[in-house]
View 1 (cartoon, helix red, strand yellow):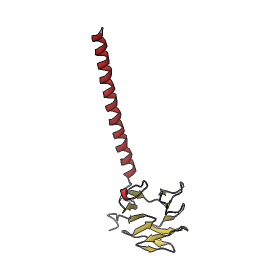
View 2 (cartoon, rainbow, N blue to C red):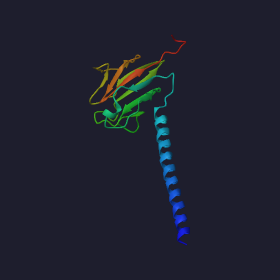
View 3 (cartoon, rainbow, N blue to C red):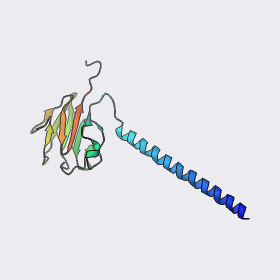
View 4 (cartoon, helix red, strand yellow):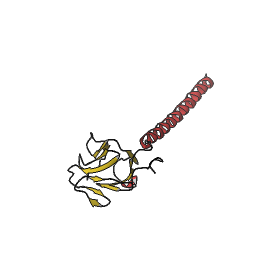
Length: 150
């Protein structure tokens, strides 16, 4: 009787170990999948690339942000790019596409929006390689030139 009970406990223990390992592998898979989804971007579209080192910031942020027709930046939930930086206003700035060009505008933020280390007061046209400073965050504006435009 003791031998049968010993075998049952042994098999239950082995099953629990496999279940535990399966759970760990599943969590690793889901974590990698979410990281890939966050960092996935649409190619041949202008985007913002984070210049700061992510670990130096005290909030979560992505490496890349694709730009749409109107991209709003701020702490508020309604923004396209949500940054939980205490130096960023709820509605801080916006980037607007017009006829293939992109324009940066500060929308009344308290601490201001910076383009290439200069505070902007009006709408400014963005060009490839511009540095956009908002709060503690600095982005690089990247607009890749298509082969037919070169």
